[in-house]
Amino acid sequence: MYNGDVYITGSCVIRDNRVYRDGVQLLETPRELELPEFLRAGYDHFSGQYPKFHKMDPLSKLGWLAAEVLLKEVPLSSYPRESVGLILANKSASLDTDLRYFDSVKDIASPALFVYTLPNIVMGEISIRHGFKGENAFFTTDVFDREFMVGYISQLFLENAVSACLCGWVEVMGPAYEVMLYKVERTGDGGLVFNADNLQKAASI
Amino acid sequence: MEKLMAALKAQIVEQLNLQEVKPEDIGDDQPLFKDGLGLDSIDALEIIVLLQQHYGIRIANPEQGPEIFHSVRTIAEFITAHQTAK
Image (cartoon, rainbow over all chains, first blue to last red; front, side, top):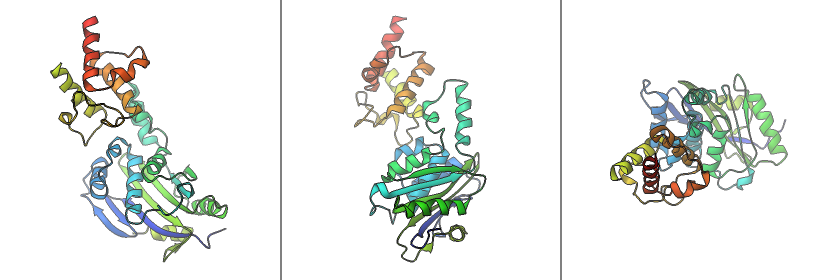
């Protein structure tokens, strides 16, 4: 497996009403705050000035917010847009939104909800925001399969399909959610070597 | 007409989830799409749903869309014409 020249250069974890970057807690809201309000607080804290955020479903908001946190101070703008990949995974795909869309169909189906009834839309939202045009894939697995993620992305680097990559786990189903998003690059500058153990380590809070 | 336009602005803000726009910020003749309010094609579909839900109006000819949806005033004029024709 190819991993010698690839490094984890940043991480963002969102869980339990908290946002962390590189292991450091940046935001915490009261535990009783529900997911929509927590996401709005995150948007106000880290971004603002992107009204389309409010139209996104919770899955897209979570992924978008994590990318915002991860790329705010050190973006991947030095890489050609076509060489930045985006590889994500989760357990529930877009089921959280699918169910709400199903409910809306009983009246008049909502077009704005329908466009989020695919899990990979979150990658589109991140790509639009940051201009990424590289390889992308979204996998659905019961748990975050770090070995698989490392193997797949290492192959992309090996084939020079990417020079940098955002990857990780973006899960939401009802009130339960968890994000572990990583920035992976060929040049490390103090980063952890890109392997399954270090993916675990980088998200251990 | 003024009352209808005020109602439409509030309905557009709610239906399109424009959380950073107040109804009174939308001009009567302000273009709703592109450089105006910046709405997109999905928003256009939501306005079609809005017309159906709130006014019982179905757009029979989709080619009329750009003309009808140009501004709040053009939508209000379309609703008024439709209600008068009933």
